[in-house]
Image (cartoon, rainbow, N blue to C red):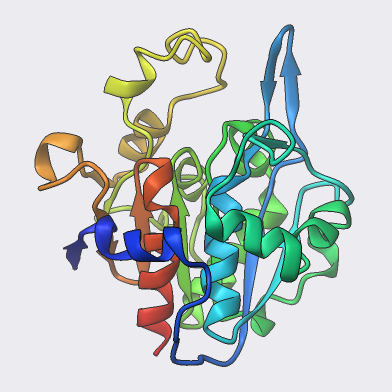
Length: 251
């Protein structure tokens, strides 16, 4: 169990190509097919998936995308709407990110034994579909129980709260984890204080017995929390650091 400063990757933001020790194997990234509630659109946050994707690929890992329904998935903060930082631009242009996002796999096609790690990024979309998909929750449990690494950032860790292990216990029970906190959600105009969401990240994790790590408990709110092969962080700037710490555990 440890806490790691997310700032360790700031240098990578400026330069997408860095030297890396290669790690063999595959990582499964779980994405949402999205949901709508009036003007509110729940999607995947591009930066919270593209940056981790780059970190995994940079270290020699292959990455597959899966979603509840398969097929194309959409992103908030997409490259057409923003000027993304180096890692986001690089992984879209050179690493096949967009092609995978246009053709995500269905849960039925996934063999959990083929993956060393599972990652769920931010954006509110996963709260609407991934978190309630028993097939995906089962995949996460199987990867973890065979010694794999589980990671998530932002709203992504909320889905981990629904993962049950083979002995009936929740994956996060008794473990230090974090995610998008209530204190920040309550101030969100986009989610109207979380009222547009099916549930809030911190509430779900605490309800499942997690030892939720708040902003006040961290030296820096962008720090990464690691406990028992579960790697989590609260906010967008930490997504690459979560992936890096997952790679470190695989080494």
